[in-house]
Figure (cartoon, rainbow, N blue to C red):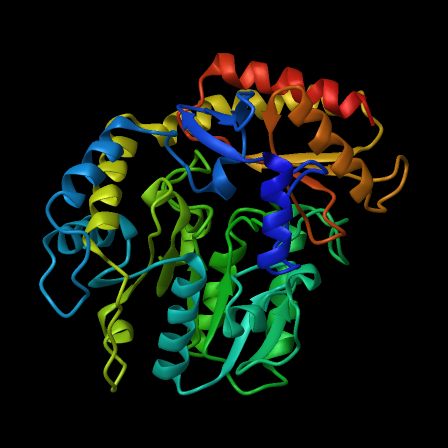
Length: 427
């Protein structure tokens, strides 16, 4: 049955729509931190539909909220008052840390970043954008235009002038040999030099932890130091929290809070986990920025009642059960366990991450040369052992991406680490 479905997939969907595994997997249902395939095999899920099933599969509170809302009304558009949308916007605005915040809901992280770029360029009357090397911000025309990762950028055509900045990757590049203070100073000097050769851009967009780029991040405080340079020139700071928001990094509710020394961002984008699988994205911005558009704008599906009901229930569960604290505790244990394994596996260059957002970078032993074939081997072996993980990285996709639901237990973390250890040793 799966082979037949695969053949039908290949016949009707684009060739560039990637599938994991030599024998692609059809997931039929899930519960908690586990999913099952069409053959009845059970897997511990350490990728959560690309960090999107953030709380748990079939979370009763979310399932109930969606079913009850579906029994009333599913959708009406933003042309009518929408109580669940207003209620979720109030909660997100309060949690954002942005003063006088306004919230606009979209259907995806791509659309959220696209909206943030529209706001920033309209507000600043500039089409120039600063972005980080190794970054990823979505698959729309404008989001691809600012993505600093060749593997996810299929065209050089773009409506924006994009200038790429150092700093998103701590352990590679010309400043990797410096200590954290020296690294930040060098990146700030590079930014100042870059800005000396161009008109002031509209904004800097940056992921606090680069997701598709392999869960890389700069030293804490880098974006606060950037913020000082940007503020002097009126340049906005957009924090792309599509993968880092809602407590996943453990230490903070938002990734930008590791760089809060110069205040909050001007704009925050979010998506993925807030809906626990329902299609929600959004933008938070200061009122003067959000309200700068001088033409009509609506969203047909952004903020639709059924997704807002899911978001409200999911956010309440995250806060009431302190899943941020769980991500910090269980994620810390998992990182240490994987680092102990990595010390005995020559292919592992680095285990890095924060909370339940962990990257295992694989290279050819004794070199910094990427080993995508090793990553593929581990992906297959982990699946055979009953564990699903992801891949990423800006250097030929040789980073294993580990991002389980934030309700992961210590026992499940140990189980997953043991399976991953066997898979790594099989290279």
